[in-house]
Length: 408
Image (cartoon, rainbow, N blue to C red):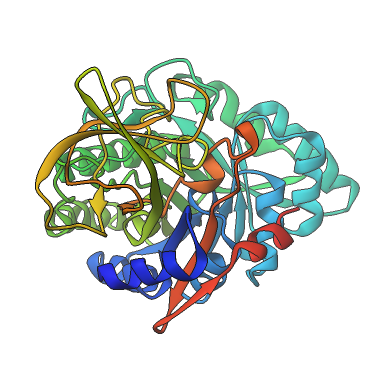
């Protein structure tokens, strides 16, 4: 992204603000299809970034929206996605959300518990229908090198692998459900191609076991991708070519089995598609030296970007990448960047190496297209919400109201 474009957006719309490059995001989708020779369909996980304008741009180029709440289901439908191409996953679905999903005619309801399955089945039967569903499975293991793991430990997600033989037959027999396949998402933000491929191999083994237990001919299998993006200064981009080399043979081997020859395979992902093409822009409000440390206070803090502050699942806080857009050629120095909140934990970065940072300088936090605004406690201390700006065909547009108007 050209620095001048970001600086112009900040001048035009003010800070703090998020900027999303929609054209680059759409191209990322095309790259993904090419990477795997169209073997996988693409499902966008709305939770990564539910901005309505972004979803409108994605709608024509992806296959499915995956919602993790019924409000996200409504956002998918508002973006023009047919109900039959919306899936609904996530734990602790309220009974009204489950019945609402059935009423809406969603393409796939992702079952996390036997209780959810019974609730959905009972409601579908009362309507004289059968609801297509997938069962989420929780593996016993996940390879190392994933940012967060949801497997191998007690979890709120899905049916544990060791419980499949007990639970799956009950779900498969429910009159109001049509079990069409299985779903696994066990690890996030991985930058290692070998680890992702190993994880996909684990998925395939579990999918085969689940099929054998239920006896169904799956029409859909969802692979929670876990593809990562480099947030930290010492991290490298995921090797996409290597990933292709490792994953395509796994798919080819699965296709050799007549039971899976025609099964639709879907990659569910959000971060990898949108994170690299979003930036949070923040202005330096004040400067001070305190006991040998150079502090720069900004108009954005963890209220605007919890993840960048290392407060979204990180065990050890490490500095994200930052760019001084106003003074890129300044003499480098170490700075502690803080936000506007009245708490000592509001630190964007500690001793981060940046070109000289002065009052009124504009800083950019790259890789901010996912898990930014809506993953942050924006109401804390009631500072102004960041604007959301999209770039499309060279034009910058404020779409903040689109987010507010479509949220339900």
